[in-house]
Image 1 (cartoon, rainbow, N blue to C red):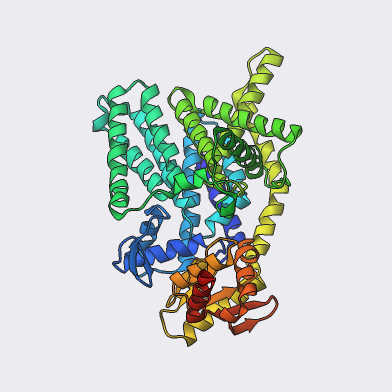
Image 2: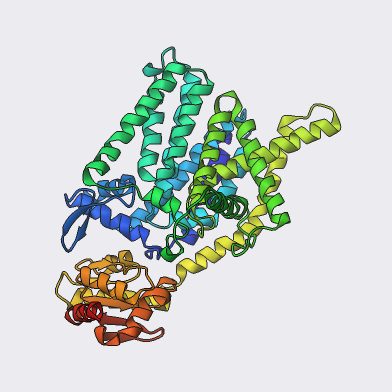
Length: 527
């Protein structure tokens, strides 16, 4: 019974922290609303698609894994935001528990460090935040964790023939599922391949490559047939996806500069923010000398943790997994802070604290020039739990945020959506910022985003092409509204008569005069 006390402590602490931070509201990022709508379309028999005024079109912006997961519950009648949030919490708890068990075994039953890592992970406000929304991160994390656990069981089993082991197939399926949930899942596919390569199981490595190809082929073929091009390459090559006028990356030097900037933001700063959430991280300016040294030191400890914890079977898969994630972070667009680090946060805690522990033990042995009682030293790992004191502050801030109502700008925005849902005939085409959130509260209408351009006539022409009925002018805080939408309205107020005006802050529902706009554009072309 005694051996289960650390595990019970982890479960109880997680449950308490999760309940303390729980937020029943829809998250304001927009993607969670998109996932739910895609899942509803699947559950209604519409396939993985978007419903638009001109019919049903194949969806391709997000991988299908998480919407399909939600649709499984919708098919049996469970379509509830709070349920989906709790489900994500359970997925996070599952991942923490499995990593606790895995690290305990890989470290030779070092319960103290394994338990300390798990308890510190429970106090990560970033993980709690994402576990409290209907987003793909927690399901992705669970699949990655399952893949590593299956590889561990494979190594323990030591099958005479790889194809006779169920864990070979489990690892491939879990890694493939991770890719179908988030494209960064390519990192765990890479780790699975490295596992077999460095064990010199050439047939298993070749089979895993074949398995990966077979797993990914249906999605690739489906997108090719539907004429859907990958958005990832386009995003990699653009300077800033939210500021299209800044253009694309046009040289090797620009790409290198972008990767250095992203490495600084996501790795040097992002890793520090994830591991030490009580620190104030400046994302507005490049890291100075001290920040670079500190960030590289954290990264070095993480990499050493991969090496020392992984042993002969897992050090290269762990290193490959982290390196692949860093590479993908560097290629992606910036401006997201530690956002994309969150799905691998439990692994960062695991590798950092095991790496730090092993470095301290190694240093002590060098200094004292004698053997050290491993059990006695392991108990000192619990001293790291003092970090829970400063980590409580951001957890408390997350809990307070969860208890607050929507900001007033969003309340006005949602009120307009709910009013349109109740009072207007279905099928209105509404152009707005964050159309995913609008559609969540007004599913009877079609919401779409305006064109990101400073050319007012081009923006209006796009509204005409979309056959827009209404436009919402809001103050949600996104720069695109004052940069693109507001100037176009200000220059052509006769095309946007006010239907509804809410105050504090000013939020407008505007009717778009389609006929007058077409005449306006035709007149400009003849001049």
